[in-house]
Length: 147
Image (cartoon, rainbow, N blue to C red; front, side):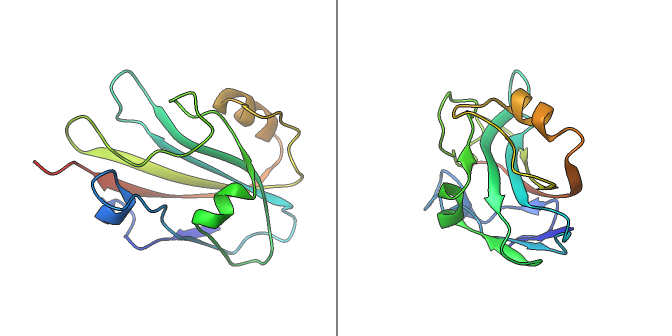
């Protein structure tokens, strides 16, 4: 499985996807989704946040409609949202307090829909995913606020 976006892996995110501009969620093209998968999980986190990894977005049970598909802003409401590090169900734009941070967009192809309640945590999601992942991919975007 592969993820394509409007930046190259380990390159800087376009400002449109950050707190400094429009704050649009990027369109992610997911390729080579296995036929054995029933849904996708999307996790976006920042491992460089002060105090440890900061979860920006957790979405489970995104329906698979083709072996290549786009996940864009509208699709974030089609899956089941989990609790991010702001204790919210939404998403938050990259907005590091200082320095360059890595924002890791991870997509997992899952065998079956996951049984999760609303407000699930990342730990609960990862536990439910164990033994159900058939493929995974990630793309990293870098970001540092303008001075």
